[in-house]
Amino acid sequence: MDWQTHRREAHALSHTQEYLKQIVYGGNDGIVTTFAIVAGFAGAQADGVAQIGGLAVLVFGLANLFADAVSMGLGEFLSLRSQHDLYRARRSEELRESLRNPDQERAELFEILRQRGLPPGEADTAATLLSRHRLLMADLMMTYEFGMTDPEGENPAVSGLFTFFSFVIFGAVPLSPYFLLPPDHDTFLLSLTATALALVALGLLRWNATGERMYRCVGETVLVGTVCALVAFGVGWLVGG
Image (cartoon, rainbow, N blue to C red):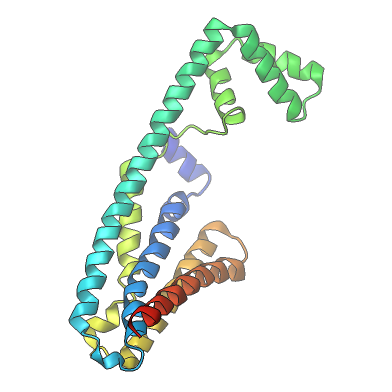
């Protein structure tokens, strides 16, 4: 059993918890992005929503949905790859420094341990012991000096896919009424309702994964989406109203 599998099983980590950032980030952006298209069209035609072409809403919405989903998925992939490269480069530099200037590195570790609450005597003892194990010392310095954790367990490709699919799945919700109904005022209200429900579902997913207070998880998610939707509707109204 590899370390990643052991970590997930020992701590009961589900894929939702492990990739919560990608799911919430991708899902929220997907909902807001596609509803912005719908709200923008509705705002531009506030006096006659029925004049909006259903095909236009779907074409612009779907084009935006998949273009942004690919962009965000690839962005997540490249971001994590960059984090991996940066971590390895800095860790290699720490290992070289421990060879070139071991006393300086030991003094830095001593100061870090002292600042984190160890008494000077114990910090000195711990720093002396750890300085004999360069790999472990480098890991500690990466965490406490640079604030970087080992990203080895993170798979950039999988994270990118989670972001992509979360964006597409949640982002398709505001468009769904326009697949079935003519683009009138009632359809826009259905899209608005579906968007609100999607934001609530995303908030509940966040609550289930984190165990934080439910009203906070749902409230923050809905609030962010609502603000973005109001901005999109307002811009559409100002430009095309």
